[in-house]
Length: 70
Image (cartoon, rainbow, N blue to C red):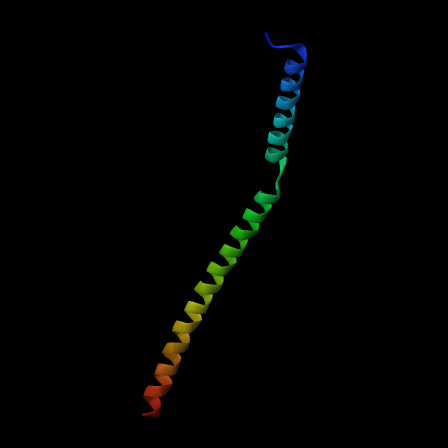
């Protein structure tokens, strides 16, 4: 038969585990880090797209100038 002390400590341990689980669920620092990563990813996609568009335009312009100089 389980003594009252063992049951008390078992219940206390379960309470501590539940507190740790709730603290982990309430912790939003990881969610904030993920949000910052998504923002950085979005900004990098915009920068890459812009640089690619400008690069294509510059390539066309320099091609035209090169052709006219020949």
